[in-house]
Image: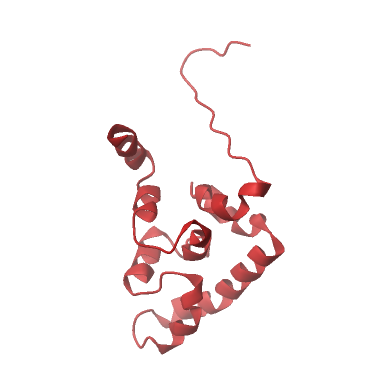
Length: 130
């Protein structure tokens, strides 16, 4: 198990960091994600978590935190957090397509598990055999 986790951490460091930080459970995984929002990358997401903004539920607190986030980031969150909540309500996984482009589609799985398939294709340098 340790070897598998170490190998996974090398391949997907943000996934391991995300999965092993304190959070409220599998159902909250997507709601604790911010990198689907244009202009927010892993570093900014980590800074939000460190500032105490760990989920979309913290949205109402965004405005009471004096200097925790910049005005531009605050405006971006004001726009995209309600849209994100609505997209989950509509079961619109496509809204979160940026996660797939960033290699972070795994964050969608707990929320959309009954509506999606993740296919892991192992490849080698050898010619394929049909």
